[in-house]
Structure formats: C-alpha cells, structure tokens
Image 1 (cartoon, rainbow, N blue to C red):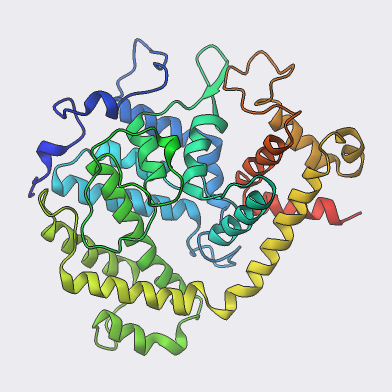
Image 2 (cartoon, one colour):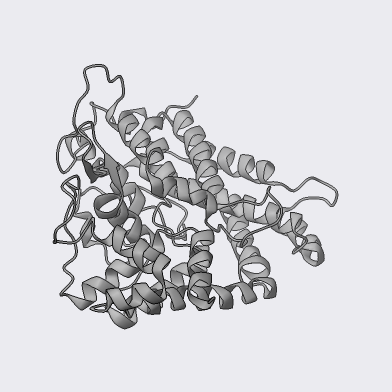
Length: 393
C-alpha cells in the first residue's frame, strides 16, 4: 500500500471537513445507528427508487436479449469497485467513493446518452435550458427523490456536500493527464455545463476517473460478445499492443488501467497515468466512438428513442390546463404523471409530503420542466409501456 494521499483524505483531520459533510438540514438521528455520514448517504441512495430503476436503463445497448450485457446499474457497480480499489491503495476515504460512485449516474434518462440528447433538445426548445445527466442527478437527489423518515413523512434525500459534488462533477473526459480537486466549496447550482469544475475532493476525482476506466473496458467486452467488433479485432489488438490470441476482456483492461494510475499518481502531480497508458486510453476512446457508439447498428435505436420520448412529452405537455380531458384519452400515463407531480406542486398535496415545493402549475415553463424530470426518471421499459399506452387503442 502506498497511502500517498492519506493526509488529503476526507476525514476529521481534513481542513475542509465541515464543508465536506455539510447537509442542508441535519438528518434525524437514531439511538442505535452505527453509520458514518457517508455510510448514511450510501444507504439513503440504495434505498431510493431512482437507484433501483437503474437496472432497467440502457448503458450502451438497448434491451439486449443476452442477460450478460451491461445495464446502467452494472456500470455503477463497476465504478464503485474500481474507485474502491484506487482509493484504498492511495489512502483515501473508501466510504465516500462508495457513496459517490453508487449515486453518480442516478440522473441518467432512459435510453442512455441518446435519451439524454433528446431530452436536452426538448428542454432547450421549450424552457431554454440544457438537460445533462450530471446536473439532473444533483437536482434529482436535492429536489425529486423522496425517502420516508421515521415519522412516515416523505422528505428530500439531503445528502452531504461531498457526495452531491461528486454527482455533478463526475463527468467530462480526462483530456489532460492529471486531475486534482478544486479548492472552493462553490454553490453547486452555479454549474452551467458538464466538466465546468473539478470535484471538490480527491475521492470525487477518483470516481471521475473510475467512471472512464469502467466504460472503456466493459463497452468493448459487450461489443465483442454481440459480434459488433468481429471485423475490427485486428485493429483493437494493435491499439492494446496485444498479440493476437491474448485475451481481451473487461477485467484485463481495467486491471492494467488501475495499476498504471496507482503507480503514477501523487498529490503533487495529481491522479494521472503514464504517458504510454494515457496515449492508449485516447486510442481506445477513439476506437470505441468509431466502432461502437457511432456504429450503424445503434442508429435505428436512436430513431426509436426519439419517437418514444417525444410522443410521451407531447402528450403530457398537452395536459397543461387540460388534465381531465387528457386523462380520458390516456388514463394510465396522465394519472401516473399527476400522482407524481402533486408531491412537488404548491397545492393541496398530502400532508405526508415534507419535501421542497418546486412547481407552480400556473407557470407553463415549470410544468414543462416537471415533465422532463418525470421522463428522465423512467426506465426504458416504463417509457415504452407509456408510449404503447398512447399509440394503442
């Protein structure tokens, strides 16, 4: 164990500790609770409905018949495992990396990054804002996801600053071979675009890199399994500097990347790879984009996603000031949406809801924003079911 970062870990000795564990309001306490602040965050995340829905959200491949192809929740588990290994070796707080990693993709829409692009187009057109899953993830844990407390009231998740920061700061390609945390505990609502700021903690930086390590290897393994790379394996061997016949799978790629990162990182240089490995990473990313993410096989899926999400959005949009009439036409979708919506609306809502009020029905743009939040929380399966509810008579 190198433990080179132990003096910078997120614990009581860290000069930023009060900022790191800060919550909007104190959590209720139990007499028999053994958990730390970050352990409480972790269990709050895994108990949330949003986390559970990740098992039915696309990572890269939509609705694969092969049960062994990666979904969003499996990607999250990989990121948690990778970040744990790195943080433990470097002497950082593994409880914090676990909480950040487990929640980092909770803001993802159905249908992966293609779904994200579609919702962003709609939101920009009707509200004048971009949709990006990191920002949505922060807004989700701050405003949308509700947990039942010990008095049977439903309240917001109220996570620590460090975990919330890790969610919104996790994305962005590592284009420069060094990553260090920022020094300021900024208001996280000031983010205007992905990758605008570095994470606030070293642990957040670890998760950000672990996210990239995870998808590079696993997306290749899945593409090989599905036969998408059959004609490009020779090129892949060259990128990896592997001799033909040597195994190419997720565990081999991940292990090489983790080992190189841990060997080369220092508090002075930041989290970084060797120049040779960093060059290989860039070649792998270029390979993945060319033959996987932009492949002809995935284009029909993108067209289907656009059809499904736009039809759901347009149907819900038409219910503004027209709820009862639309409910007669599309009872399942409209009822489900308004049941959800009333938990956040400043109206006669059930007294069990103690969460933030974030919508006023009289504000049309806020209503459209509410629809986007609602759709973003859907699983692939539920979105398709609601689409079929609209088009079938």
